Length: 283
Image 1: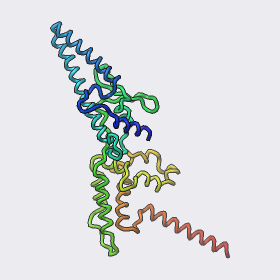
Image 2: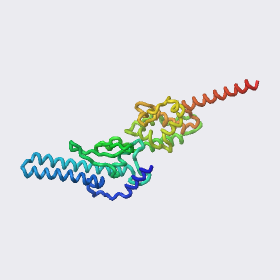
Image 3: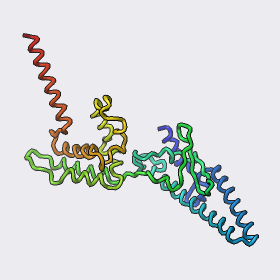
Image 4: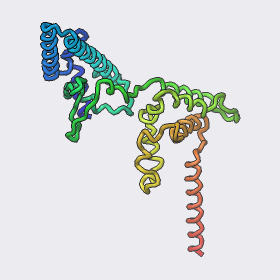
């Protein structure tokens, strides 16, 4: 949480604007490093041009242009990150909790370094919380970004529709719950949002852990089965069942999931056993 406050403060006090150079928005140390590399390449370009070696001069010119393009792309990524993270405006962020922002939170707030490797390619580095340096290429930064879209709105529409159709006449819903839930989960990365973010005021994972405490504590449900990736609906139906059951409960207040029905039967059985034992003791 403290780190999020620092990130928010950074965006609120950002001195860079749209007209800032692509080389200056990642901090003074990075700007000086880039300027030195570019200056060195320019000197080599001038030297080869003076010697009449246009082929080598063209090589350095092409490299300078490539760095310029990469810096422009990196600037665009930083602007996109600022927008998706809310730019310091509370509640405006669109990143899903599924997204690991640990690298971005450091690099985008000038706590990282830009380096040029032996192939003259950009490598971006940050020191993680364990003191290890993590590297990424500019094009890899957005690879695993997951943004919230219409997932919650689509689910809430179905749930509210189910509530409106609730009645005592035994009439079925006018839509197929499983079909509609499947349509939500199959859209791009929507299932990752549904597994990680608050939907209709509730978190799936919190409810899942609470409802399966005994199985988790006993090891019946291993730790790797609690990672968000494990709920991929193409391989697992727990996410689908959870949201489908929430809609069913909205339509029928007496609806019980198979697990709830099983617990109820077990409670009834235990109660009957206790009553029997009490009666035998009294006799």
